[in-house]
Image (cartoon, rainbow, N blue to C red; front, top):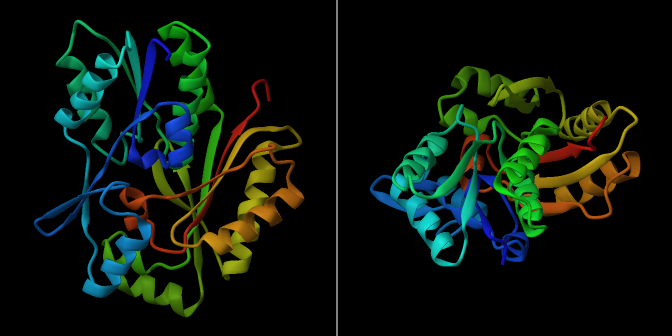
Length: 286
C-alpha cells in the first residue's frame, strides 16, 4: 500500500473498479427526501433516484458530507497505514463539501492532510483523484502528489448535454415558463464548468444535435493534440452513452481506455435523467 492515501467524495463519479484498484476512499454526498437521508452511491443510485422523483413528483435536496464523515474516512486511512493523505473535493462553487473536508483536516493538526478544491465535477474531479493515487503508488512525496493532481485539474474539461429542462425547472434553477418553452421547441441545453460553476453554455435544437455538439467541443479542446484521459458519463442513459462514445471515438483520437460511468445522484438531481457528458484531460504540454 502507498504511504499516501487518497480520499474523494461521491460527486467524482469514480467507477467501483477504479475505486477498488487504487484503494480510494469515497465519502458520500447526502440525498435528502423530506426526513430521510440517503448516501449517494451507497443507499441510492441514479436509477433509483429518478424512479422515486417521478413517483413522488418532487426533487430531493442534496447536502455535503459532514466534517465527521470526512474525519472518519481520514482516520480509517491512517489506521490502514497511510502516513499522509490527499482529499480531492467537488468544486467549492457548487457544494460545501470542500469546507467540510477542511474542517475535518483541522481536527487532526498532527497529521499530513492536503485538501484540494477540484473546481470541477464528475470525472473531471475523478481524474484528479486517480492522478493523485497513481503518483502516490509510485512512491512520490505529498507535494508531488498534490502537484500532479493540480496539473491534471488544470488540463481537464467537462461538457454535458441535458435531455430535458424538466429537472432544472423542478429545482427552481430555471422558470417553469422557460422550461415549457424549451420542451416545446425541443431545446437541449449544453452545460460546462466555468470558474468552478456549472453553467449553461449553449442551447441546441435536438438531442442528436446536442450530442454532435459535445463531439465538436471535445475536438475544439484537443485542437489537434492528444487526450491523456477520457470519460463518458451518463444519468440513466447507458445505451445512448455507449452509442455516443462510439461516435466520439470515430471522430476524435481517444485513449485506449475510456472510463464509462454514472453522473451520480449528488449531481444528476440537478441536471435530470438522460444527461450525457464527457470529461477529458489534455496531454501535458498542449
